[in-house]
Image (cartoon, rainbow, N blue to C red; front, side, top):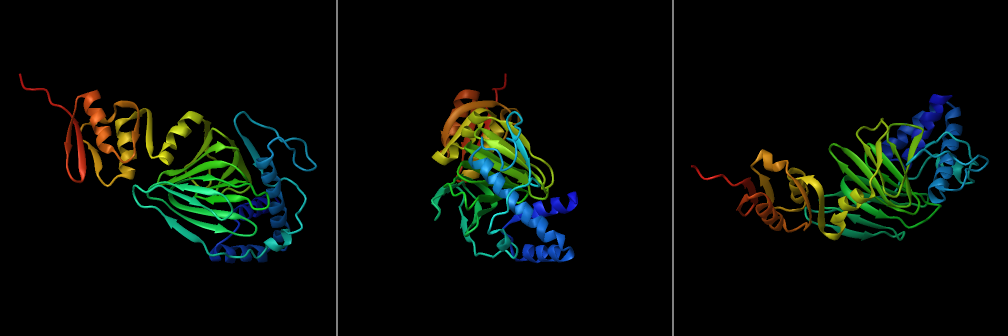
Length: 315
């Protein structure tokens, strides 16, 4: 029974499915007549999760108020709840064509969505948008986006970032997908997150909190850092905000946005710490600040700006 419930929760959290996923679900449903009922219960439980996200102080129907751990909540998707009248139609989920959106290096795009939500998309990112009758879904293939979600209790807003998923009703949050993992950060309201391959457990993030995922089947590392989240999202205004970051980390951020690349030719310099606010498209201003602060030699070319400590004259 627990295994069947966990599998059903995993399927529910993947809704809607692509064609391959639908075939796999059909095969799972055919293996055991009890699977259909488990799936319906899991889908009904998601409506309770959506209520918790939208109304954080409201108890689940027929249950005591959910316990809260400091800074986060975990909800088991196997919890009971009334099955919505439309739940029967969820088996055999419909497929929808997605709108593909990409941004080039240095491009930051504000994209209004048809439901009233807005996606602000970072440089060198790609996502797909599906606005269906039952759910709003974003597939983030790579890069980063910040979402201001229009409240619609009947259509949860789900972002699929490969190894991690995020689910909201009306809130604002960012999702960043890179080769080394996924980070979800909440700036307003609450968001439920979970690893894609783990059935049954969600983490509820509040404004100012983040979750970092490194694999599709392990719980994320979570924390509270509202100031750091706002600095990390300074790109929305075309800025890079630094607060005790290393030169190497700052250079990596500038290079994400500019064709003219910064290159650090000094290992010691790369580990120096910085504080400052810079325009994303002005790497030369950043280089000039380093030159003034750390006695750095700057060598500018058409494609690179090389940085190294000035050599002391021979005695």
